[in-house]
Image (cartoon, rainbow, N blue to C red):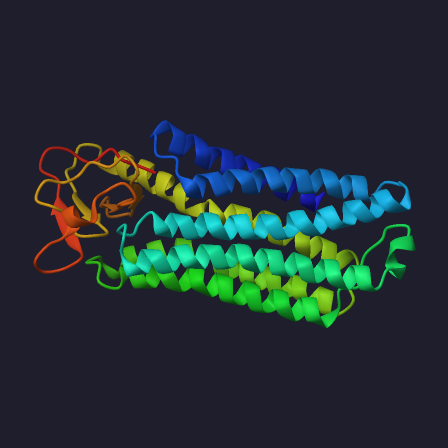
Length: 308
């Protein structure tokens, strides 16, 4: 029941996120990873139900491997969605952006290594395949490897936004709200550690439950940035629909503000929209100023309409 509820909630939130991005015509790589995560989550739920049925030995073993594969794939796609949400806020061609792209490649390599490790251990000791519901005893090695990759991966997703916000001229409250959205990855870390603990202690039903919560929870958290931005935007429009407010952007801006449909907007209770510019399509040379890499621009005609 928990698996069904969490999977449905994750699918609804992801669909809502994709509708928002599609409506504003700002779909990007992070949305593609979120959509793939939703598909893998639904497939994982179906495979779990089939795994509990009474099939032949070969079919049951195949379903078990599929559960492990989709579990690892869903975790990776959710992290990549969050990572590329951060990437779209950086300036193309910069060292920081290249580091983030390399980090994304590292996530994919870690996914391949983790599944290869599970496959090697399970095929080395094949006595588990004769069980009514076969489940491989992954042992301490897999648990330790997953703890390391989960902690390092979530640390990157939490630490990187701090680097982006370091020189941004925002109030303390505004910074806290933005960082809170990205820091939600810490919740996934806690669930991942719980899952690894059950693997370490011998697996069983609790391991399967922790895996379901981890996968669906990571997908929900990957969509928080877009959903929270949309809610804050609606609140700001209701509180002051005709008030002109300053626009705060990441990355230095030219004298004439570039209207980019791939903008991510957060708004706070002060009705000040915080626009995290997507610089994936902009030229780096147009984003240089003499003083700083961060600029604060005031809207003179009307409040911006970009929201992603």
